[in-house]
Image 1: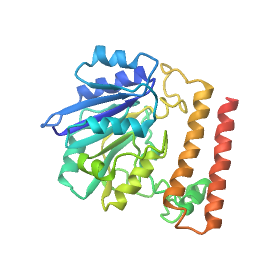
Image 2: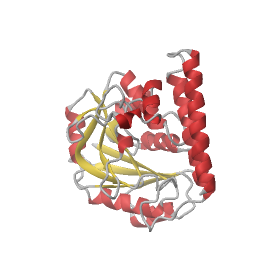
Image 3: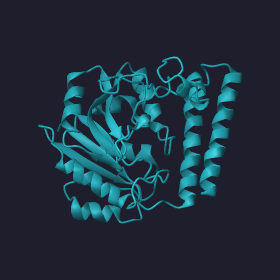
Image 4: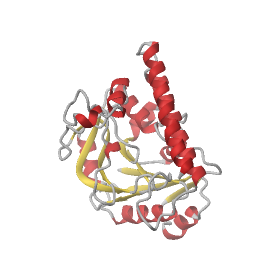
Length: 299
C-alpha cells in the first residue's frame, strides 16, 4: 500500500467528519491508501460517528487521552503503507493533496518529511508550518519583534523565515505535525514520536531528529490544505459552528505548550549553550507561559 493516513481525534467530532469526508473525496494514490483514526478517549461521540459514516476507516479507540505523540505512535504501529501522513483532524484536504506530495516524496529519497501549504479558512498562510528551530537567537529576535522590523533578513527572521519564496518548493527546518508526510521506514528508524510531549512541541522535536538523521524536510506549496488551527485545542475559533472549549481546557493547553518548550530546550540545547544563556531562555519561556496562562484565565 502506498499511503497510510493517521488522524488523531480528541473531541473534534464535526471537524473529524469534515476531515474524513475530504480525504475520501481526494484522489487516491495508485497503490491505494488507508485511513487510521486514533481517538484519544473522546466524549463527544467521535468514535461512533466514524463507525457509522466511515466504516472503511480503521478506528483505534484509546481508553485514556495519552496525548498527540502517543496517539500518532499507535497509528503508525498499525499502518501498512510505505508512506505515512500524520494529519490533524482540524484540516480539510484538497483533491490533489495526497497524490502530488506523495509522488514528490517518492521521487526524492533525500527528503525525510514533507508538508504542504497550510492555510486558515480565510486563505491566510499558517506561519507555524514553515519555521526555523527555536534557537536562543531565533527566539530572542522573534519575541523582541526584531523579526518584524527586519522581515526580509535571514539573520533576524530565522524563526518564521518570511524572507523565503512561499510559492516555490524548498527545504525548511521545521514543519507542523498538522500535515507531515514521511517514509514509514524512517519513522521506524527514529523510533516514532517522543511521548514525553503531551501536546505541542512534538513536531519540532521530530523535525530536529529527522535533520540529525541526515534528511531534508520539504515545504511543498503546490497544493493547499485548510487548517482550522487551534479549533481542537481551544486557542482559536475559526467558525461559529465550532464550540469554544471551556476555560480549563484552554489553560491546560497553554500550560502544555510552555512545558513542551522547556522539554525541547533541555533535550537539544542545554549542552550547546553556556549556563547563563540557558537560564535566560528558560526564564523567558516561563514568563511568556505565565502571560499566556493568565490570558486564558481572564477570558
